Length: 63
Image (cartoon, rainbow, N blue to C red):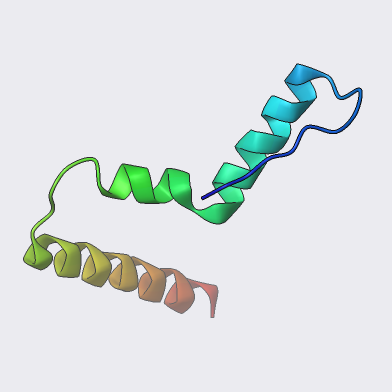
């Protein structure tokens, strides 16, 4: 849970910006996107494997 205390004399827009940063840094936004729909475990593994393969190709090209 993200908590934000308003500073004395702080502009609302500045507080909203700080809140957005806190939410993004805490990983809430990423977690919400991940839970938006159900993904089967096999799909998760396949996506991770493909990501690893792409990373490996990039590393091979860089050498």
